[in-house]
Image 1 (cartoon, rainbow, N blue to C red):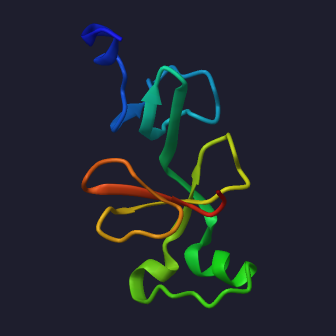
Image 2 (cartoon, rainbow, N blue to C red; image 1 turned 180 degrees about the vertical axis):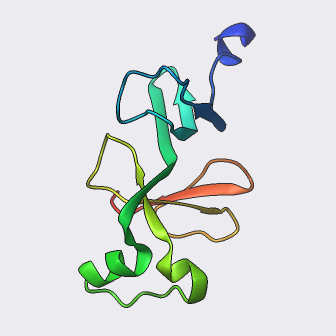
Amino acid sequence: MNDSARTSYLENQFLIAMPRMLDPYFTNTVTYLWKHNEEGALGIVINKPLKACIADIFAELDIVCPIEGFYRERHVLAGGPVERDKGFIIHDAGQQWESSIEVTPEIAICTSKT
């Protein structure tokens, strides 16, 4: 792959939907594009909250919520229209779990299913 093709990828960038975006799912959204290469792209919409909060999700899964304080009541974000059966957590790369994928030295993404 030549250098000009490599620089055209948008990995680790934010995509902001243009005001005239016709797709209703992506209207007024900001998407964090965490993977983008010759095989395709993976992104997470980071500004489309659902009605459920983090504590609700843990309760639905019958798991004790390990998160305390303010973040426990934060709304879960929709993420995207693809792979809706998965949950993704964008987190500090210093904290790694079994399914964590390091995106940059500072950012990692953990998925609920592998």
